[in-house]
Image (cartoon, rainbow, N blue to C red):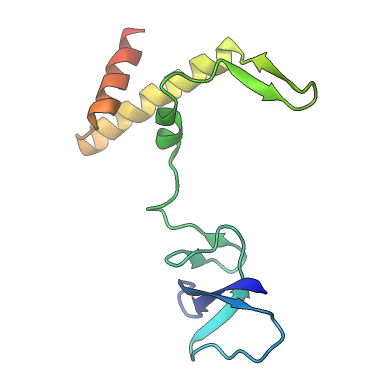
Length: 127
């Protein structure tokens, strides 16, 4: 059994997820179609004609990713050597500059930052 997304044909909105063998008779409701799901298929998402798109409200933003690590990782795993390697200082510095810019933009656009975001922005400005 594979997972299929039930899509409103006119809008591409995913309204349901079903398991179907792809062979047994399955007739979706009028105005809908079933497409084999990928990992990005979910109720509330959309089908754009070629791929499933995660709803913006669930997509992890770059700001969220950079905020997740209080300090960017100092080491990264290298699969070729099966060892941890030091992350280049330039990469760490670039992440900090990007995070500061994203926080400043969010503050300018919305006038609202969480206390964690505000503290991080102030710390980055002091560096």
